[in-house]
Image (cartoon, rainbow, N blue to C red; front, side):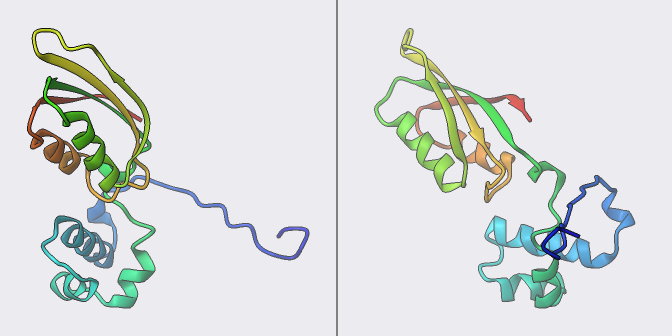
Length: 151
């Protein structure tokens, strides 16, 4: 109890094998994946496909995440062709994904190719890291994307 009479809620996190958890958690994660991937466009559609109630979805959606979503900081190395707008497009994709850009380092192009290092805060990211990388790789002028660090 706090001095003012209220309760202090200390959250504790664990990593657990999903197979050990009740089926409702599987269904909530599945519904979230459907929404994230675009296979379901509304929560009603996602919960129907995932066979979970709306109330269970809302109860657990902010409490259970795939392990790959438990991220904080991600550093990417991009190899890009020196064409107009590549960095701008990359920044647009990361912003749309919900990332906060912490640092950008772009080297001067050599033989028409430049390296860009992006460090992103990803704890509020709306998509998976794998999906982000796929989107970045699809940008005209991006040759390669590698993960340098993940914290």
